[in-house]
Image 1: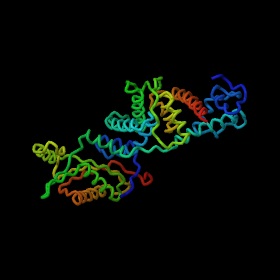
Image 2 (image 1 turned 60 degrees about the vertical axis):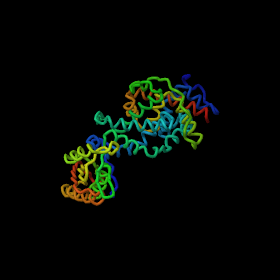
Image 3 (image 1 turned 90 degrees about the vertical axis):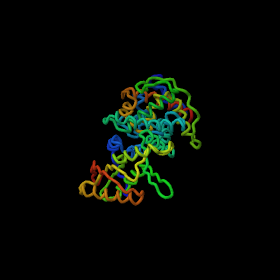
Image 4 (image 1 turned 180 degrees about the vertical axis):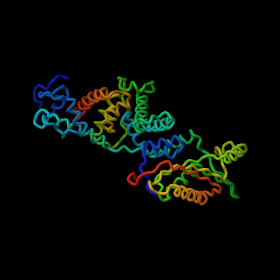
Amino acid sequence: MQPEPQVGDAYLVARARDGYLDAYEMLVQRHSAMAYRVALRLCGDHHDAQDIAQEALIAAWQNLARFRAESSFSTWLYRIVTRRALNKVTRGRAAELADLLDEVADPVPGPAAQAERNLAVDAVTDALAALPFPQRAVVILHHFEGLSYAQVAEVTRSSVPAVRSHLFRARRTLGTKLEEWR
Amino acid sequence: MTGSVSEPPSGGSAVRHLLNAVTLPCGADVDELLEQVADGHGTDRDAHQRDCVHCKAALAEFAALWAPVIDTAARPVPAPRGLTAAVMSQIRVLVRDVWYTLQTTDLGVIRIAARIVAALARDSARMVPGVRVALGRSTHSKLAELAEQASLKHRHPHAAVGVFGRTAVVDLAVAVTYGDPVHEIARDIQQHVIAALRDHVGLRTVAVNVIVDDVLMDEDQ
């Protein structure tokens, strides 16, 4: 069989809208790892992360007709995953993504699931988990996922200055925690 | 935060001292220095930073402080096994894509999920030279609908949802290599897929609709 060439997400989205589940399956294969990874880093629990990723990918499919082409599929999926993670950590309380960068009460996350992390990773993970959700979200989207400030603002439906402000505060808090650990 | 760093920090409290300040004695913004390091540009120093002892010290401290974050971010987090399959399984239920071919033999009944037929068709199409991408979609024909309606009246309550006998209609969306004769490729696809479904699934009546909706340059691959 010939190797599968890299067609763009936009092509696959268009075909998926036409009813080609194959096309959506390729999108899921491309982006499921990201969905799970972001969910895990945002909520800190494997089972919750798996649920969030699964629900987000299904929700994306159900809402393909409403997907606006000016945004990339991955940015759109980041938004869905982040919103669902926010809902999960606020224990089901209704939370709008537009409020993502407002301060929200954050529950203490459960114990980390990974068994073989080294101490440094533990320290970073714990420091991240202690951040308020909005700060954790921007750190993960920018520093872990490599999204630009503009993309993070798009995902969180916020502004670049708001993203930058949250990052400044988050980095200071993370730095202080990591300094205590060192 | 206490404004400017008033004296050079020392020992283990150096970073904490920095993080409690807004600016360095040279006037450099502490947040912007930490941002520079965190964004991976700690060594891309401007003219001031190359000569300033405060900036050089702060950048070095922040680089050491932030290294575990960079390491953690770089660690792969593989998706759980079966995540894609679980998602697609739920979606197939939602779109009711759960119908089957139905063949009655002397030994009993054989059902093959329509999505398997579509997958076989897709994989078969991908074998045709010039085809770069093929996506399969199995659809009901009018005949299939009639067959399904007839069979539904008699089917067992726990039987599969919908059958369409030995008839299949398959839609294939394909992208081909730019410059190749598109109509010939499309014809090859039809012949290839019809033969494959006859040989592998035993389907006798197969209609293969080919939609060539993109051409890709060689360098796209």
